[in-house]
Length: 91
Image 1 (tube, one colour):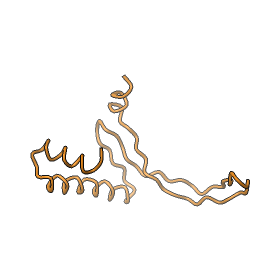
Image 2 (cartoon, helix red, strand yellow):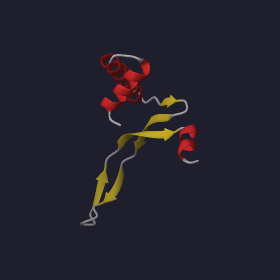
Image 3 (cartoon, rainbow, N blue to C red):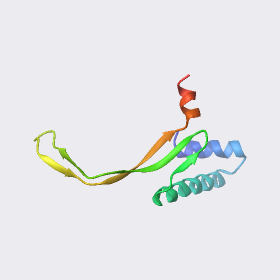
Image 4 (cartoon, rainbow, N blue to C red):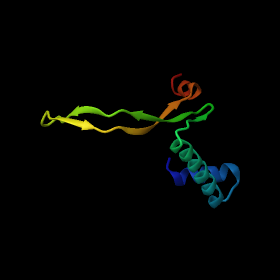
């Protein structure tokens, strides 16, 4: 399901215009992104948790040449599914 399909589903479920549904969807995603930028986690009961995971700088190896390279520190967004979501798929 892509954004357009999701907005259409929100629109029909909540009896909103597609424009209102899209603004609602965009607002929610912007709120989640702003929280993640501030290093907050976002917990949605029954669904899961979004949080920022930090990776330390480390040494790696180029698989072609075997040369050692330095991999810089980075951040990524992690999603941890809630127990209810896991149970739904692992009956």
